Length: 418
Ligand SMILES: Cc1ncc(COP(=O)(O)O)c(C=O)c1O
Image (cartoon, rainbow, N blue to C red; front, side, top):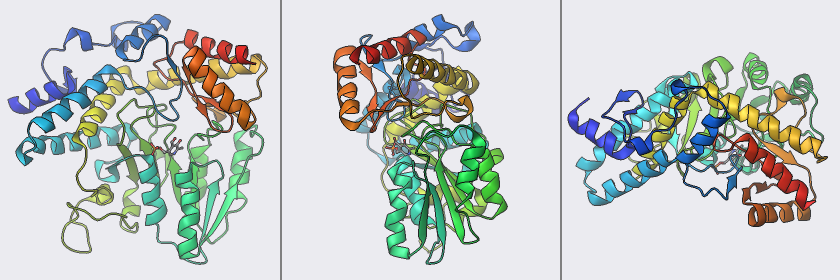
């Protein structure tokens, strides 16, 4: 690595290494207690909270929507913003293209796929819509959806179907399913020889249901169906090897579980599927003809001028995630989710999230009528500093910036609201 590149990365990321590239000595204030330095016990997680900038009075448990980024990410975004505004020349900004490729490669490695299969887009909404709008579907074709999908992987299909005349079929789970076999059977039931797409959330943002994704991918793959997995609730929360999983596409956002910045996300498209999918936006970088000059999934990201600071922030987030260790993070997300689920169940709340631990991960939803959910959501925040989400029920989704004690406090707070 050149001295200027090293200096740039150190300035932007404030770290001793980034994406595996060694840099200069780390500033003590920016050094989290990485797992390699000692046991990953409750004290470790309490210490890790000092890496976040939110006040001690707050309990952010809204990872399903937005996580607080650690200081390393916040500072990387700030430094890159200043850097660009201090010198907007192409010459100065060229280094961010290099950084974007480094981020792409590291994300590809994290997900067990190739860099050519990863597009760096603006968020999961955009990634989902690229798939919905890009599939070559026509009248007579059928799409099977989980009815709990996010609108960008749900109503977005209806809008396309209204234009192109294909049929959208939905599978619902009015009560939480008891086991994976039940989910697979129900998802398989509407599949016919005309089914071209099976699209579902890896983990549902509305109920916390964790789908038997590998089995559903196998089922779709065996019939030549494109399986689209919305990974907004798993990217950065649970390890995923997409090549082994066998999905055809996977979408995710930066600002959720991976603790990255806003307005950056990813879309994975399996190499064999890239050519047949149409991009929505053609911008600088596409090239001159109808065929893209850009390689692989890069054809889905010619989106005009991008925010380089988000790239720098995502690089810092991936670095943070990898230094903690994806397995350590996943185990912690499960531990927090289980503590929350059990605490709420023991306190007598009705839960929309399945009881089977194999069918949930980090998202837990308490059933409530809309007025009650609104009231809980508001008072939890105003009175107790608990940041949740009103999704029709009350959703809590803690991640590694919470301790077990924080989860217990949130349960107690909700119990006290009655
Ligand atoms: C499952 C799922 N997909 C997509 C999205 C959209 O994410 P973003 O707003 O970052 O585009 C969300 C957001 O909550 C989600 O939960």
